[in-house]
Image (cartoon, rainbow, N blue to C red; front, side, top):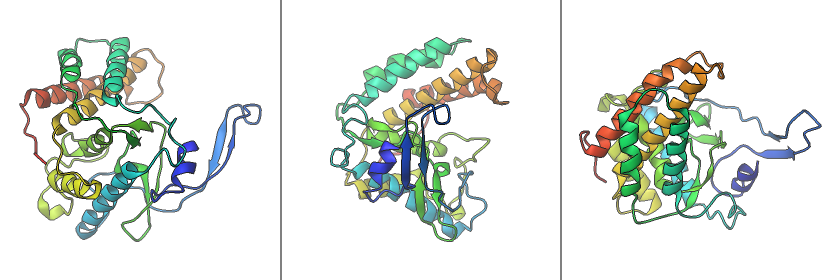
Length: 274
């Protein structure tokens, strides 16, 4: 409620927040009411339901919204206490290392390697912006007939953090196929979806960057985080504490994500340079 209320005064599209109730006696828990935004939600990264000519415009619109979010003056909007300024990478490495150890089942050597590699490769240059934390195509409501974002939703992981962490998470579909959300790793140029290099170049242009010097680190961190999350879901599934029918498949996913991250860290996977 706090972040979308503040962002409504910026150029980042969000649903209008109407009311916040923190009295748990009303319905049994705190809640807020926000605007219902009519539009499209794209579940598949490959956008099979849209013409190829429109796909590039959709990806460009997503890119523009992310760049606008990272340009927001969060202090001016009253969000200086939305998170901690600086040190985001260190906190993420520490948090997800602890989470992984707390939910560890089988041995995943790649996760152990990554937990040592990441702290040694934190970029010296630090930045703080609002970060969404789960910025992806599916977490936006789109205009029914135009490639235009009407609202960015699902702010539960939002905080103050490093913008390149947000960008790297947004770019993971170019690196990791998702059986539920599609595969960008092998799409041809005729599909209309930009390659990662073009997508990053557009973000750099919009955010005033000359390039991204530590792209490998941010991708590896995003994969490490997802692997730790997947391992946590798997452990809860083993313990019978999660209702998702796919929970027990997350163990294999955690291993795959960790091994991809470690291969990227070691330089075994190719990486574009921006």
